[in-house]
Length: 117
Image 1 (tube, rainbow, N blue to C red):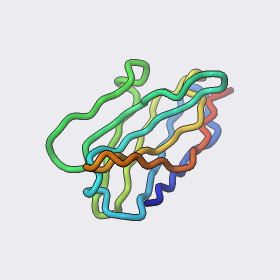
Image 2: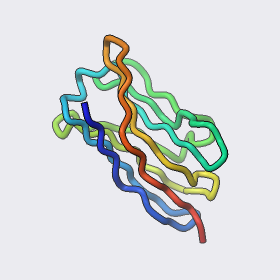
Image 3: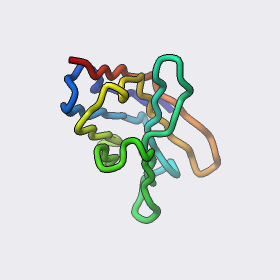
Image 4: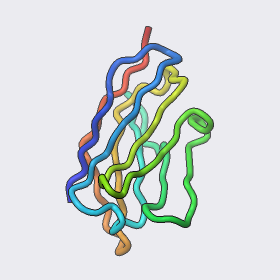
């Protein structure tokens, strides 16, 4: 399984970015998919996670609630993270994650998000 994250970049505070995570297989075979991030000098943290089929609930880190939205397009085997009202503290490498029904854990290479004026 390969997860390809893209969409990172440099954005000013208050701006928006949309990250994409394209999977090499049908995302419906995964139980959940999500986004994590690691800021310089900090541990990796959960940003958002969602089930890949209807049912279940999404979950967000408190620090991004109301600003970030995770979504999926099963036809494109892609999960998105829409990030609005970005803050400098959102600066991090963002990683896509998928967990299969059997508990297998998959990670993509990260994409850098830098929020700076």
